Image (cartoon, rainbow, N blue to C red; front, top):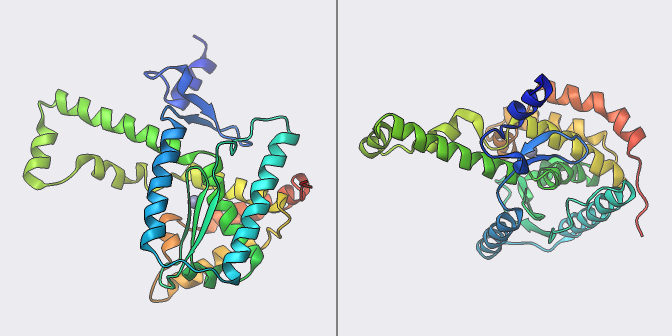
Length: 274
Ligand SMILES: [Zn+2]
């Protein structure tokens, strides 16, 4: 085995699982460990999404209209880009859907596997305008397009198995600790930041792909930097925006986005869709 193959195995973590589970993220071509069925995950996401829709107060105002419009433009632009690039469309099995949840306290947005998107009214104070909203949506959609949840779920399984193996090797000590303290070891491992909530590589990838998808859809991606700055400002107030707890902001992130801006604007201009 040459060094390159070895690095490949090591980098992807496919040693024990086999080559079939190796995949690459679209555009960035980062290696991913994926062996959980995407269809299954999408089906689960759909169920949860339905529950959210029943539980939350949804609004259908002009903001919701612009969310749907941005979403539709991104759906079409993403599919068109992969079609024109002669690449498989990662969103082919998506069943896109959008909701605007009436909750000013929650400054957050998410996109579940399969394209199930939710925006909370609270984050509209930070996005401020269409380009800002497109930046947040592009980032969240990028997590779904790059199948970060499939990757995370696959890793979860590995960690679960690893915990069980450790448990056997230590004569069930971990289980004993859990029983006596009521602590969930797997939960603790997650808290250590390994899966919390997307890892740093995935966040960087979502930032990069999000810029590309916004630019392809014809939005001004220079607003992205301003959003992260507004987010930072909001953090200094009494209530830090929830988006920040799942999206660690740093000078480094803003710096990287700034470095990518011109390249993305030049290489991924607005794409014509039919
Ligand atoms: Zn993210």
